[in-house]
Length: 609
Image (cartoon, rainbow, N blue to C red; front, side, top):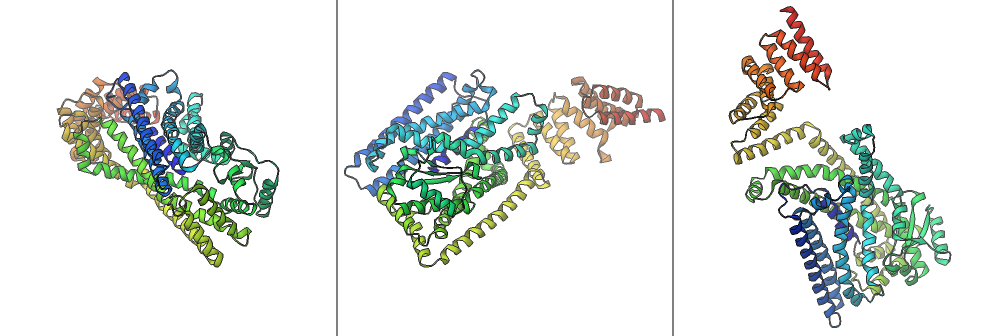
């Protein structure tokens, strides 16, 4: 189940980090033909793999076939992700869909189209895996229910993004200019993100349980015992629901919801029918433990931590990639579109950061929270025997190996062993609670450091220096590839100017002009530098005026008129400076106070003259 969550998030990352390529590579008919061929090939390969497993069921060893089945599902799921990335990046299906009427107006709808495409890959996988699944586990599920349940249990992980992105689309369509301006700022984006994250975290369970088709657990012995246990634990909740996932035949329970008004306890029919009353109590005590130990709230904090983590680490990885000369050479010499390569690298970095965080950080806390919830049974009961027997029944019923490793849960054997230790010595419960508390404190300290690093990289002086050096590295590499490009030398001049490296800026701008620069900005920037440079030895009033006049012949923008006025001013031609300054002031639509101050300076100089 958790693996499917990861797959959908990775697919969303692949889609949201995509940038259109300069060269589509394939025509629309070619792209669609290749897509159909790849999809059919995926279905054919998947069918062959599971037919081979199915053929071995009658003679094979279950404990060999069970991991083989799950490995095959995992590999085909990953292949589906790879093919999805091919559809996006190589076949450019996004650009084809974007041309459909009204689609470009609603980016979220377009994204959902491609989420549906990935669902189609997985629907093929689960449908073709069903016969082998049925043969191995003896399930009475229908094929359609098996595939639909795998989809339904995973899709809610996309809910926060759907709400966040969908509301952003609506805001862009509505005539709220001030709100749009706020959301275009970094501060506005942060406020918007956290506001909607909290809203979704609070009311999301209401939407999810309706999406799953949950129904209130009927009155009876099971409901009465669960209600009594919740009263005993002082747990407030909205309702106790039957969980129809996999037609209710999965032996599981769950709890979701940060606040009482939207908190639900979920149980499946299989759990209620297979387990005895005390065993059901133990499972519900485990779920209550998640709430009482604030695990749901911590999961929300860990998600925010992922945002901080990716915010800081992403930049560091990108810097490392850019500064890695051999990798850059491979990109340049590959002949591939630089836009596509850059987009692909960004996607890969994003996915790697995500997988590292959720596998090693989030997964660590999930495993230890599950153990803490297991141990919470001792808060309500004298013994965890019913919970231990529940695990044993799960092993016997499902055929699952008790020592099967899991990244988000300890194995059943490990969980049982720890409960037995705790049964003999309750000090193990206290030791684990202390371990969890220490881990959370260390995590908080680590995230605080990550936040400082992220702020420094994006808003501090360290980040500005790194970005400047990064920009310089990229420009210089491009110049080595295109030594006759005036635009590149113009960018290099801008960079040096921004760092107050005036001699380098002069050299770069003059080189750009020598190579035939045609844009007004290069002439304008160099004119301003010659007219106002802090280093007196680099000033050249006559050259400044010459360049400013050239810039004016290419554009009469207010800032160019201002440069011309300044150039007249430093050459002692104050009346001409007033004339050009007045034109600049009249043409300006923003920052008029600056132009007004300039005009005042020129008039005062003309009056004295």
